[in-house]
Amino acid sequence: MPQKDASRCWLCGRTSAEVRESAGRPLLPESEVEKKSARVSASKANFARETGEWWSRVPDQVKGMDFDFVMGNHAQFKAVGFIDEAEKAKTDIADPMSDAARRVRLGEEVTIGEVKISTDDKSRRDAVLKAIEDFEKRSGRLLSNGTAKNDSAPHGFEGLNMGQGIGLLRDVGMLYYSVQERLLESDREEEMSKRPTFGVGVARIPSVSAEILICSICQNLVTGLPSA
Image (cartoon, rainbow, N blue to C red; front, side):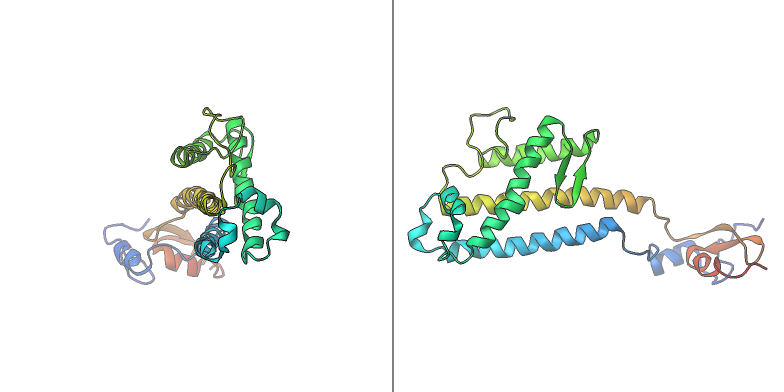
């Protein structure tokens, strides 16, 4: 077995420190977790941009109207230029977030966008529940009805006018994306911790039929060579 005193790659001659400085980590194909994270971050940025413009586009005669009434009759309010987008956000984001709040409290399987949480995943369930309860405490409103401790608080969008409803819709949407980002980042960090870091170590290379000191980069290059 070769001696480790020099700790230099047999092929390129670099030390572990030099290899890490030049490459850091292996350039592996983008993982599914990273793809999900990218989609969530892009959707969050797009949602924040769109909702930031909505209130300025509400006709004055509609601003004081009941939010649930307008959303329930959105086909009659085409003068509100973003009404279809707001209804879609309520259906695709706010309603699923409300359902997730109910399910996590009942101990059921939870789906929030790109993230699924099983019934036995206590740490992730606790993280989601804390995010929901913190949001409800700040807003003074429940995301789910009939399952929270303070069940007397208003639920969802009830009693809000258009301006208030749009503000809450934006906040619920940001919670929806932020929870996903947090959980996916945790998954990504766990995944990255399992990936090998670059360095120099002893390895058996089939192409040379021997154990040699070789860095991670060169090992990846020569592993596929024909055996000696």
